[in-house]
Image 1 (tube, rainbow, N blue to C red):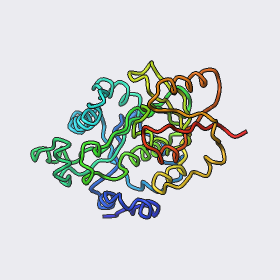
Image 2 (cartoon, rainbow, N blue to C red):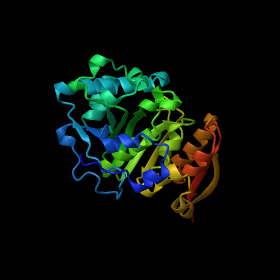
Image 3 (cartoon, rainbow, N blue to C red):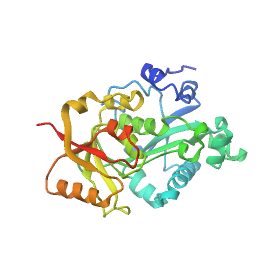
Image 4 (cartoon, one colour):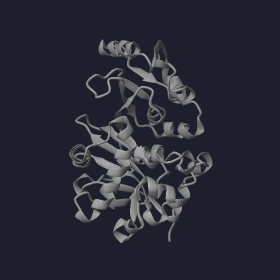
Length: 304
């Protein structure tokens, strides 16, 4: 078997990601769940990165014989987001994700799943045959927008949220989104998450995070931030190293404003400033990483 080695950076800076050894053995692989018309031309050609040398598994959502993989995706996503009352209905996954977009993540050979993962993913021995060779461990959905080069990150989840801490795969969610952005050659990525959500600590590392909405009553959860990042793989390294992003410090400075994730008025005030054409405003990945989810965050603006 011709195995591909883990990148030197990940081997050095992500020692807690022991699951990467399964990538080298071929028991875990990235997967691409996309209809043939949506296949990416020249995948991974935009961003120079050596983190993902493995050829992904290609699964066709139009193939009736692959329905079990989709059922496992539904189980993973619905179990992960059920407590927040935001699981994706099947028709939304198909109409808004599969048909216009790109779905990817990591999958593990079902026969190699730990007992804890089998329980989390509701896998029984009869579900380990040839037709059920792979089980998705994570899910990342991105959808292209009418703005050329810009995509919307619609959903990100990983089996970690269903497991006790000792059984989790470190940085699985972060690397799943990284793989999708890299593979699909995404230039600009927008997304949504709620203030005070742990997801903000992850999403702020893919590029300098611009605040598009600080308060979003159009959403089911009004206390939602809409953000945009110009994808920059150099920023990804700081997720592991926890070193300050020098490019960010060179470009931006504190605006004198703060955002309080516990105060709706704080969100509305920042949003009205954006609405009036002030800004653009940004959040700093290291500021977010160093604080509790309930702490106020510094709002940055461009220098000069």
